[in-house]
Length: 149
Length: 189
Image (cartoon, each protein chain N blue to C red):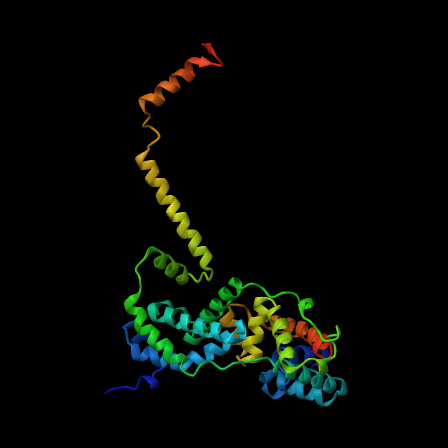
């Protein structure tokens, strides 16, 4: 397999400038292509400079007791976990891999609206019309724009 | 015969955690907290936030260890790193995006002279270039370039195809290279 400069450049971007760390099937063709081309050698040097700049990126180590903090927090967590409907739905959405908590909040609001709707419908069913309301309806039926029908 | 939990593999530890085994959980935390932190840090660029995210991920696992289902075929680490990545994505969405590059003040109005930028400024600029990348490209760069995760594993963690992952790495590097060349003077386009 021969590797052209375009492929070589792509592999350098994907797998990095350490050609010995490339996947086996492209390593040897990559090394051969590099050996035989000054252009590719210049390209590789250029990429190495670029990678060195990327590696200047800031990094801060975690506090040494991070693992211990997590372990202690988990001891408290299991006991104190609140059993609320919000936690239930949050867990439910977590289960389905939905990362956005806003969606969970939205779903809970929808559920609350639904429950409220049922409650209102239950306590004020549309069929239950008061005698006063019945009278108004009758007048509206008998009078149309001030005239008696 | 007592088996030392540190000798157990991840799936056996998870079995014990499901039965409330706190010792097994501690082993898992000690085994992966640093790696998870490094991934989270590369995605959120803040020590405190990365630590909070790692803690949240582990506490979720402790509360609901059955969320990882070995029958679904994913390795525990692949699944758990994905959990961490998702938490980072959530976190980034909540945070206000950074301003435009033009907001940066340069000593003489010419950003091309890297000699004029001290190390802190160079790092801040680089951080900004990286944070401007789309989520997927940033994740690909963090996993493959900074953490040395293999392309296959990174694709699994991100839930994308290998081709999509490789394309993301290439795009991320090409975009960064242009900006680095323009503002920091490293490499050519």
